[in-house]
Amino acid sequence: MATCSQSVPTEVDIATAGPARPTAVPNPPPWWLFIWSALRLDLTGVAFAAVFFALSVTPSLLPRDWLFQGLVTGISSTVGYGFGTAVSWLARTQFLLRTNVPTPPPPVLAGLKIFVVVAAAVTCIVMLFLAAGWQRELAELMGTDQTTTSAYLRTGGLSLLIAAIIVGVARTLRVWGRWTANQINRWVRLPDSLATILGGVLVAVLIVTLVNGVLIRGIFAASNLAFSVRNEANKPGVTQPSAPQRSGSPASLASWDSLGRQGRAFAGGGLSAAGLERVMGAAASEPIRVYVGLDSATTPEAQADLAVAELERTGAFDRSVLIVVTTTGTGWVNETAAQAIEVMYGGDSAIVATQYSFLPSALSFLADRAKAVEAGQLLFEQVHDAWTQRPPSSRPVLLVYGESLGSQGSEAAFDGLADIRGKVDGALWVGPPHSNSLAEQIIRGRDPGSLALAPRYADGLIVRFASDRRDLAAVDDGSWLQPRIVYLRHPSDPVV
Image: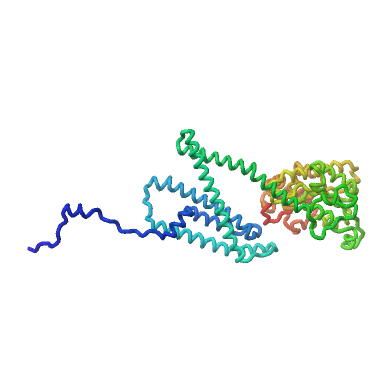
């Protein structure tokens, strides 16, 4: 019988051989480990950041240039990254550790990270190309300048920079919170978890206090200073009027220099009586334009008093129509609206407005909204008091007008529709912000079946909403009662 030539390993052989060596696993490339460790990016956070990036560049209500879009996208991507990081942390602490799911080997993790990063980058680039086309379509619809794809791609770089800054600040605050927790533990022995929470709360309270009390006020103060300098300059072609019917003229109670940039453009602009006669082909009066700037008086109350004094000086209460305008942030009055009423009445009109801020409407909406409301209320109340002192038979038609933030200030002078109808002969409010309380009350109480975008209230008997002239084509159908109230709103206006 043949014997087996193989030798059976003895216990000594097994002992000296040592444990079996596992198969060697290749490590990720050193350059990849260096980049990832330096950035310390969360895989799930990167994926969510890409999703939020893609959503932020989808079509907007109004065209966006690359600079504004980069700001929006950078902030949105950071929010997505933070949300993804929170999801990743919850998954690790609440699921993976409790279920003992094995961790994938380093090559698999490295490959997954590379895939997610590459997929996120490709997604963002593709979305930027698509977004450039969408923005061109929006610009064409709105009749504004169109962007190019190459220019719009700068959005990606800017958003990446903004996201990096925000994430860096957040990480700095996290380190600060941990340091605060360690300092608390040095003086008061607390559980680590409680000390960490307390440290984070203290840092958060300090940051909120600094931001609200110092940073935001500083930003608005610096902006106010910057735009106050701009307020001193004239618009091209604007000259001081000589007609006594204009504020800023030699006969005016408000000096030309005190009117501000927008006030000088309003008082010194428009058509004269001779210009109206050429347009209308008939005799016309010199239109009255009264304006009081921030530098014309020391307080809002004094501004309103000065405006009424100017109306008295110019004989505004003897005209056929008197319009009280609440301006936008910088004190701007829509020249088209002003000239329209002057042409309608052949110059037998008076328009009065005051300035309450140096800031543009976007900044005024954040910093000076209360000033817009105050200015609108004070001016209307003072003018209305002077108007009611005239015999009813000799009073001019009294109208109110405001655009954007100005509509909010103008609307705030009234308690409701009954108050409006009892005090004025008509109201026109253009582009009312969503925060206009009266407009929103009307929209919520609209007739059943009408849309919030084009609401119909009380069958259009008192107030009507319109986006263009076609919506108001049937104004003389006999169903619209006097006085009439109109809200003009563009369907794509994000302020609305």
